[in-house]
Length: 85
Image (cartoon, rainbow, N blue to C red; front, top):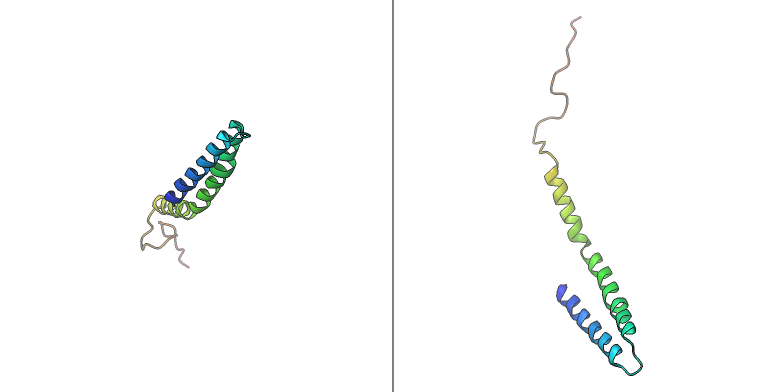
């Protein structure tokens, strides 16, 4: 996943360099090309692709935070007092 991201950033960087070096291009146009074609879409895609890993990590952390109830029955630890008739 990260290899594709690095490849995409390389392509976008080359597009930005070509924009800056073009006779009618500007450095500002190159910056916007890099941000709008590279950083913004890539950050969205990486966030969406990382969702399952974040969800799994959250579930694992919640499982570790919960006390182990074991096989003991739940309820009041002290038995209620029984009244004789």
